[in-house]
Amino acid sequence: MGNNAIKAHLENSQKTGIFQLTGKGLPEFPEELQRLTGNLRTVDLSSNKIEVLPAAIGNFLQMKSLTLNRNKLTSLPDEIGKLKKLETLLLNGNHLTQLPSTVGQLKALRTLSLSGNKFREFPAGLGSLRHLDVLDLSKNHIQAVPAERLKVLRLEENCLELASIPVSILTNSQVSLLSVEGNLFEVKNMRDLQGYEKYMERFTATKKKFA
Figure 1 (cartoon, rainbow, N blue to C red):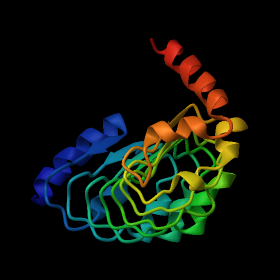
Figure 2: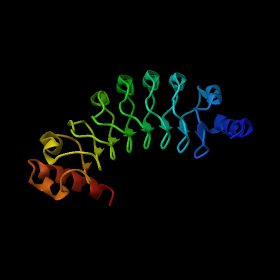
Figure 3: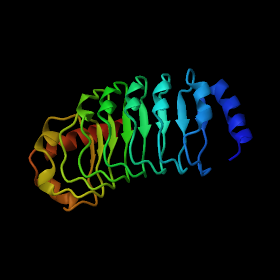
């Protein structure tokens, strides 16, 4: 995509605070966005070919939503932790194996989606994100699950054994939707786990709210 086309998007973004440029084969995070660090609230660069998220991402202090689904990211810069207003971070379909510890500084984060990456372990530091409600780690290679303070935990198509589901997630957590299809056990066998009935009470109550 030429600079003129990006310029046109930038002009619109100055008015709306939203920059969306998906499926254009961009090889890198557009340097031109640096002009809008003061007012960009939403950035969506899904379905491109971005391999590196620059350290300059930490300058976007007003950003509330960052979407980089289906790119080629293998890591995130430490500076991601400077986005104190970030509420939504979507990184599905990349090549991530871990997150920087500074992700734990994203105190406003409510939704973190990491489906279809290459995680083998549950990312460290997420326990400090007290407002995190939704975590999607489906389609990775995770083998163990800590009991996090979440409402929605998606772990489909990993490498979990039934015994790796903590009793505390069923009995004492806020998790009202635990998705574990496509792992190394049959979902129906969860009925035999201690605390399953308590989990189902939360699940049913949540389902009724949205019925």
